[in-house]
Image (cartoon, rainbow, N blue to C red):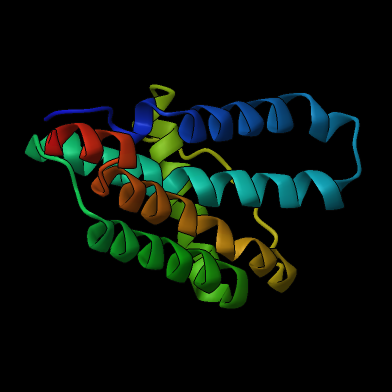
Length: 151
């Protein structure tokens, strides 16, 4: 696979840094309204990039903008459902608790996940567009490269 994977780019690294600083430092000191939305924006920008990057790694080829939009829309649908539907929120808490329990080496024990469904979190949904926009930019050759190819 030629070129840089989306996961190696500044948007993913920046989103991850924002999430880590926000969740481990800022949430203890700043108002929940700000830190909660900051996590939503960073997570929604990062999740599709991570999924598309994983697909690219698994299949050994770059994914196009169409694939990135499909991933972004799926992430948006899941996020919206856990903010609006109590059953989806419960499934999210159980699933993430099990995954984190396994990651922490507790195969039987589930980690308790706190999640408060908040329809106002949907304000962050446009952040899922970062991955498709980056993928689209990667598909288009730069004007300077196109000019040198013609010579």
